[in-house]
Amino acid sequence: MPRLRRCRACKRTKPMTAFLRNAAHKDARDVWCRDCRRAYARRWRAANRAACRARQKAYYRENRARLRAYNRAYQRRRRKLIRTGKWQGRSASAAARARTRAAPPRRATGTGG
Ligand SMILES: [Zn+2]
Image (tube, rainbow, N blue to C red; front, side):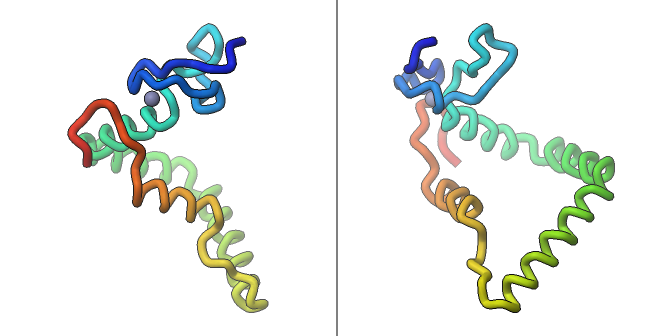
């Protein structure tokens, strides 16, 4: 398996790890890099707010019990960390996501937004 791949959207050559797994492709990797997929998804959500909301609502309805149980456990963990002074604020991954949102990757197509 080649170690590098050229993204069909941004035309940049990136390591295979920059491409999401996608079982529909014969080598099980996407032909668009993560950055391009993320930018595309963001544009799609912006252009399809209503559909996106409806989908999220349906997902919540169908997984309500599990999501509520998860959130209860998370808040219990969080309160305990706050009590013991170990709360770091948002998790490292959430902080990384926030940084990515603040400075989105350059993209080859689209008008930004
Ligand atoms: Zn790309």
